Amino acid sequence: MWGRAGMSDKYSLTRFLNCIYGYTFFNALLFLEPVYAVFMQAHGVSDFGISVLLMLWSGGVLLTQLPVAHIARRFGAKNVMLFGMVIKAVAIIMWLLWPCLPVFAIGMLMWGVQGAIYNVVSEDVLYDEVCARSDTMSYERVLSRRKNIDAIGAALSSAGSLLMFFGYEWVTALSVLAMIGGMITVMRMHLIQEYSGITNNAGAISKSIKNAVGVMCASPSVIVMLVITVLVTNFSYLDDYLSLIGFGIGIPVQFIGIVPFFMMLCQVLGQSYAHKFTWVRPMWLYVMILVVGVLFAVFAMNYNAYGLVALGVAYAICACLKILLFARFQNMLPPRNRMEMLSFFSIADQTSYLFMSLIIGLGATLGSWRYSIAIMAVLLVALGLWAIV
Image (cartoon, rainbow, N blue to C red; front, side, top):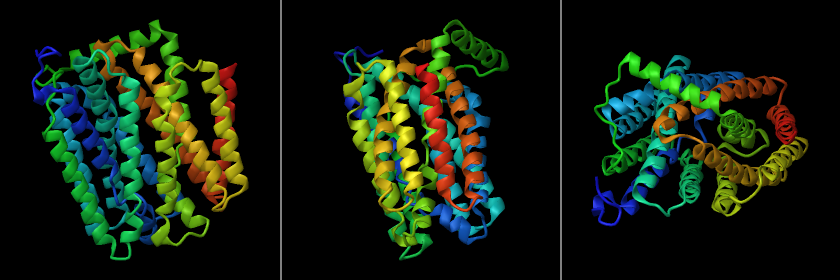
């Protein structure tokens, strides 16, 4: 093991962070993001069908949450992260070659597997590697930077709608190139806390799950923080619908990328200052959940381009909230069971996402996405009141 003072360059904190930030950036730089839902609708998928496909994505994440943690321990985190980028690229190509509902569904499941890898393996790698390399680097600061880079990648991917002037093939090609960029950054990554070679048998999996459950049962505060963080994340999550919302308020398809671009900029603003509010008492965080709910309601009542300002402010506040809440959850976890605990967190996250996708889809059947946003506003206000009480 390298000492921190005499650590070689390839194991330096700076090199690791450059690689993990690069992986994060290319994972988010999906030029397909602002147009894939519109592309699916052009091939016969309804509004509710889009929500069902997104539920399949979430189902793919759910099915692979716990297995992916142990597969990473058996075959190595880098190899698993690389595999995730490969199957995401394959799904993108499949949609272009065979644009039909069954292939869309299979691709969404493949995206779900990659999502599980990103949520569980890369989060665990980030926390452990930062702790192994530095006594002074704040995890909240690193997480803020990573979230900002993720948001920047997502914001730049909004240019995918402009690429529709040249055709969907160009959008697909550039999205695949971005995934290749992610693969390169993973291959350049050197890990100190590598788990490759650890036995992955049923007994070990069962024991680690029991240990993780034991941690939650012994610390009710962990469960409370998990629930609040997960619900805030999902009750305020509109990322997958922003392009459709933009289309719904009258923005032409070639320019609908403006909506996710604006929202990602708002996220960057909130995430950039999150580390400055680590001192804030939990009560004030819960009050801000209420504020976000009110802002969602304002947008639902003013469902037009001007109303996007209220949604943007809500996105900025929520981006800050998510970092502060998730960092507090991470700090509660014992290192030995961190990956399994993150698996449980992601399971709860995806279960909540499934519920919200259904709610949003049902709201859209009333004739407009604004009804879905109104429902989310009510849920956020209710969550804020529950957390305060």
